Amino acid sequence: MDWELWKTALKQHYTAPMETTFKQFRLGAMLFFLGGVMIYIAVNAIEPSVRQEALLLMGLVIGGLGFAVAMLAQVRMLISRILRFFQE
Image (tube, rainbow, N blue to C red; front, side, top):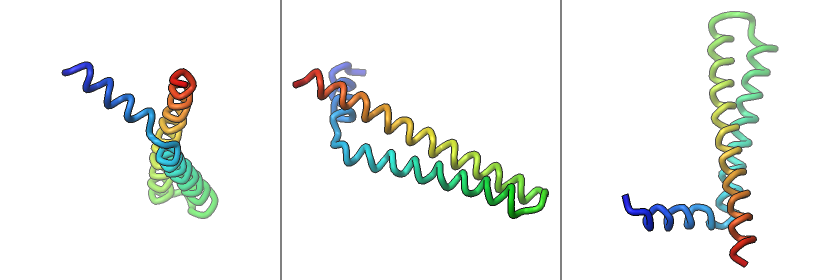
């Protein structure tokens, strides 16, 4: 593996426009919210059953993935701002 290739790829990733990173953050936030809504519906609108447990599991998985995507985007924005601060 060539270090210069990795360095170029990372620099390109972290100097991407904020609009791109914010779209990633927005997607993660929407998935997190969707997971929360699914959990709320499963607890309040469905009687205890295997169907309720399946919906809860789907809500937890979708919410967890959304949280991870949103946090990765947030870290990307933070690193991008730090890099821009030190480049100028």
